[in-house]
Length: 90
Image 1 (cartoon, rainbow, N blue to C red):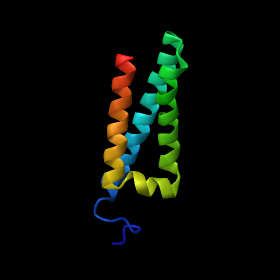
Image 2: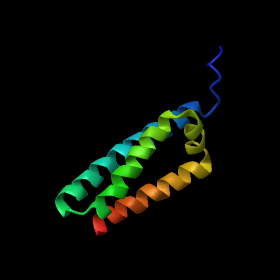
Image 3: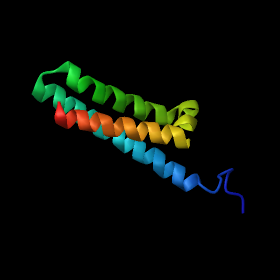
């Protein structure tokens, strides 16, 4: 049975992309909350801007390929962790 060109890890990659989208929504929410309650564009803006870029990037095919690579996923994960730490410390 043909699975539409999907390789062995197709389900895993789609799960990764959906988790990246959820992380993007999380960063947008934290960024807007920080921006509103701390009255600081410098604290909130990087969070929601990266979250928005992450969500948009998951829908652009060329960026999508980079995000689901092992290096891309690791870099995105580290950025998300760093931004969330910044959100709670700053």
